[in-house]
Image 1 (cartoon, one colour):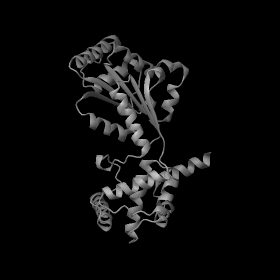
Image 2: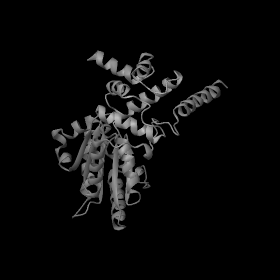
Image 3: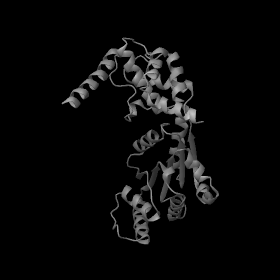
Image 4: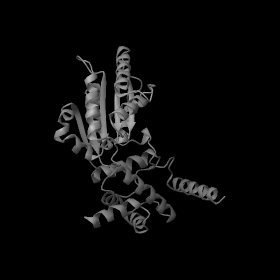
Length: 295
């Protein structure tokens, strides 16, 4: 019973802050929504690289960036734009040896297989499927999200998969998406053959203060607001605390709007943001402070 009451209370609070500011939707929800996709200059460049990699039939495309910088959001938008023009297999957090990697790939493409089959049989099944798709006029794109979790052996195995391609046509394309350490892994001398097949790459950095201001204004307006509900002075504090990471910006702004509503303040200024930080409810700030102490 208590849990039901708490849930209803939380929903009412969010509703009240929306009514208080005149929003039709929560501006800073973390749920992916194409209407709230903000294109900073570097996100446009990153998306262009992804799109170019697919359209130019690049064997391997690499996109890296820190946690919360928007890599997965870009992937979702790319998949939405391509629709049925390509066959896409999305693999997240794949682990294991090369036999397991082939199974991850087959699962992502909804290709049935016998789990007791050996590597050669699994590889042949994948190759047959790729050729069938090619004959039907469809390209296959495998997207590995969180690819930094792959071992060097698995990354080398992915390079071997691109050997299925023959002639002028690319039967299979790979998109590797991961955190900065993925780029470091690929640059290791033992993976230089993999690196040579990366025809397009981009590294996403956190946003600068100007882009954070534009992101906040855009999302406020997309939710039905004026874009001025969060002041420029508040944005300075938000950028400083979040270091320009979009996911953290959204989290802090959402909590700041709730605090402003509770204070009967129609604008989030730097004092409202500081109240959120002082109360310790923005957990990411505490993590950043601990990391700073350790350094």
